[in-house]
Length: 110
Image: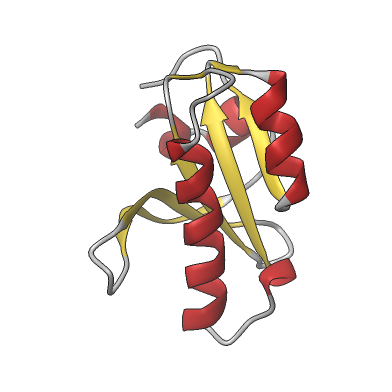
């Protein structure tokens, strides 16, 4: 996955890769898990395109952010949840902001 191989280029940050397809005890898998420069978890849910009624990717990002916080005994603020797609509808981005999920538009999703 291109995002995991070159996060600076695709996400605009220097990130340290922890794992692609990070497994949770619930049998969920986050697409990519990084550490950011402040050593915070940075969990990524990748979608191709997110329309105004496409909630699954956002729901997954919210779930992964909070599951990592619980697993590691951290506050939710100590974990960054990120929804990545080529296109993200502004309505979804507004909703994501309510739940502290970052949205990143990446022209090429591989």
